[in-house]
Length: 210
Image (tube, rainbow, N blue to C red; front, side, top):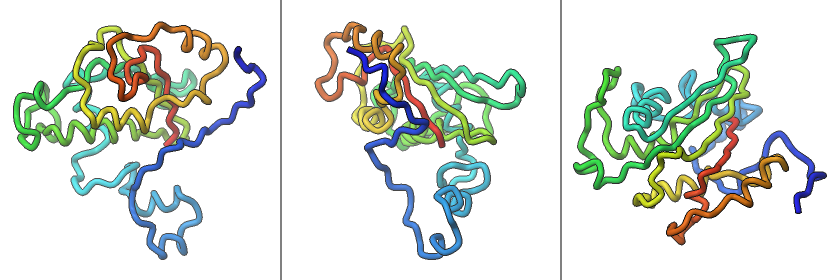
């Protein structure tokens, strides 16, 4: 039975935490909010730290798109076509080391031109963490994730992706009652890993506010 009277909140706290960096005393003295600290520590326009200035959010996003791991569909505000309000991500596949066909530290060329023309498997792993750290100028951008119909449910899933999914997977509390019904009645996919069957649900929704 659905609880239609359940209160909804704009932000749902993720029960999992992730280490970003150590907050030094000077940050506490000079910064009033976490956003102030992030703006002081990270480069302008960045929402994470990276010691390679060419490995931007766009670079990591390009890795996932170029490898056909995802398809993305950004949506803009009808009143401001330059403002991306939310983006849909369709997960098509997760590449394993075996599929890459080379040691993980070896570099591979993109299929089309890019400022930084190469990446390795470690960059590919990081892409799943950094590609979605985009935020619009109003700090109100959301991501919506789902597995594409073409996703091979029998493919080998790397452990690092299972770890990623554990951290970012959908939180039931963000789902409206109209979605909860279809989600819970949706048939489970058979022959899935015991580690986390939610990793294979074809209907998956996530909300991210950076």
